[in-house]
Image 1 (tube, rainbow, N blue to C red):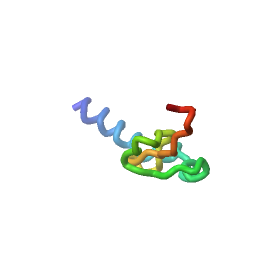
Image 2 (spheres, helix red, strand yellow; image 1 turned 180 degrees about the vertical axis):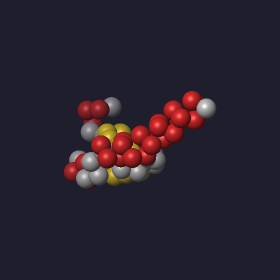
Image 3 (cartoon, helix red, strand yellow; image 1 turned 90 degrees about the horizontal axis):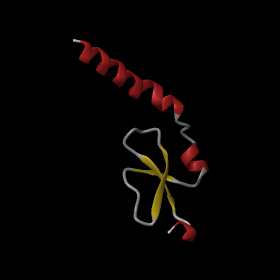
Image 4 (cartoon, rainbow, N blue to C red; image 1 turned 180 degrees about the horizontal axis):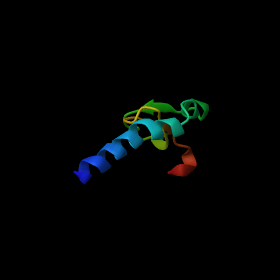
Length: 64
């Protein structure tokens, strides 16, 4: 029964607390796009408001 209790608290945390900590405008401020996967020429820089998406930005030539 404790497992369900901890699972419930974790799901509440992941659903309500974590999205509140992520700035929804941050990805667009950094000229990125929220996607499910980044392309090979892009890199992940941030999490998006949606839990299944990440913020991708084009790589600079120095990052290779």
